[in-house]
Length: 281
Image (cartoon, rainbow, N blue to C red; front, top):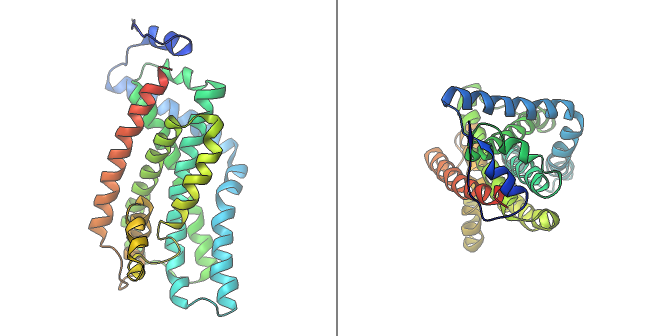
């Protein structure tokens, strides 16, 4: 059964809107959602070597320079080395999710128009947008999981086994918030400007997310601490430190979880709204 809609826009968006299957029932929609995810995962597996090179090199060199080279030169304290790995893993998860949601979306809408096939599937437009977020989040989780053993081998130490269930929850929320932010960026920025936006957004995100320093260590730089508090990635970094570095002064876990849930929900609302608008262009 197809649904006929009247849309004032002309061009491809009109063709999609004027002949779009009605979303099926819950079971059918879940099946279509799963099929879209399976398609994206197949592409990820096929491109796994290049994907890993893209997402691992930057955090790997950050760990190497700060945790190995500068430590060997006695230019950093052991405490910095301790807090570095949870922060770098958080940064890897969050930024990978942002990039792997925003960039494919911008390209799909502007160049390949591959998104049109998904919009013609018997599933709601909102669900198509959420699938993009979930897929970007999964890529972020893969990158973060790979970084954990690498970092532990490079820097030494261990993470308490009992902390892992909560660590996984923090990682999932961090990945989803990054994916939701990627949805906002990918539906707000023209593809020709995406490189400039990434340079203007991702670099500040990287250095204002408490990945390389503890949040409460910024007490003497109150203005910068306020900026850091506005970055969702901060609560991934601090939440992970709260769990794997017991006894150190970090933002309490309940605050981290609350902020990440609220941030993810708010960004999803903005992102899906932009996705609806973009799908009609």
